[in-house]
Length: 224
View 1 (cartoon, rainbow, N blue to C red):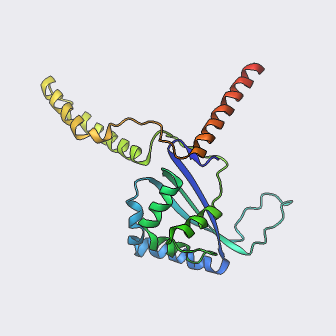
View 2 (tube, helix red, strand yellow):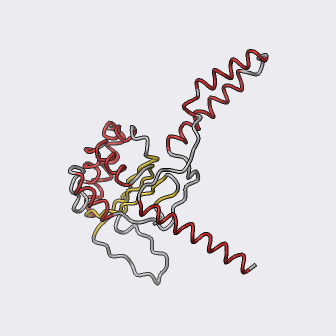
View 3 (tube, rainbow, N blue to C red):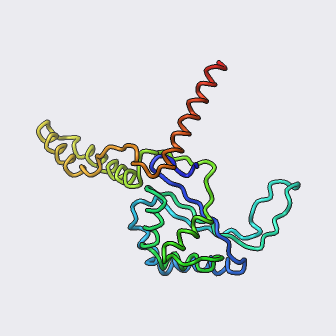
């Protein structure tokens, strides 16, 4: 499984919808974002989410890479949901469902066999059935959660301000300003590290990946 990279989990869910409802879906997305953003307000409170995106793919929009490739004759259009988050699969689905249940129902209501976000059991099964495993998942900062990145950005800005303010200070004034800077930014100075065990299956995947890396290195040394 390539859905996990460090502390992040990448989710891809591809769900079918009748082609004629795709137009309604696009209109709904536009209206919600422009006119009723409060439907998504709960999403912004979930600090574990890096981002979430819904994309409508028309049934004629799938790429034909070569003339020898048969033309697609699809009965449905599709909606692709993509998201990156910190934590386990269950934690994410639970949080998402409780944060914006009405928003989820609004976005997915036209999709084939969508059961609604509540009760959770049916929603779990719907996501599992339509989820596509990633072939490759890259994370530039595998030891950093979304909150780590946000605090690092804030710390960088505060540090720039601090550097400007100390330019003309004497030693005693600098020490006082430095201590105040540390006190004001304590919440942003935590160390990053490995995430706790998500599941036994995830731990097994990590072990297999490590073994494959070691085997590849050993093979490279033998060839050299």
